[in-house]
Image (cartoon, rainbow, N blue to C red; front, side, top):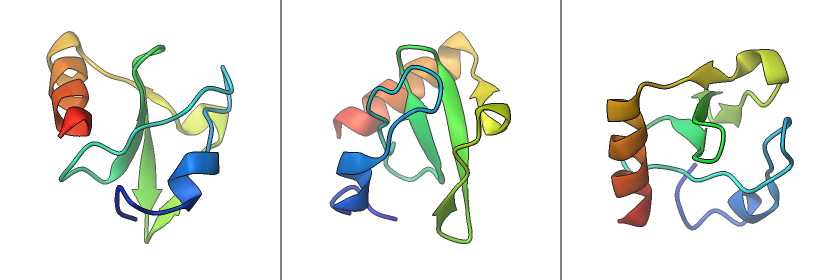
Length: 69
């Protein structure tokens, strides 16, 4: 999955139904509002609520910077 993938525009967080970002160089989709990351395994986003992992404040900043470009 890459940042230009049209699928990224329609994927949503299973908890708050908001958009997800794809931080550059990461294999996760990220919800900055809830600070949850969802893994991408073999190119398939794992978007079950139980798949979300809370990230640290440092990882949050890194993901936000990476998603901004």
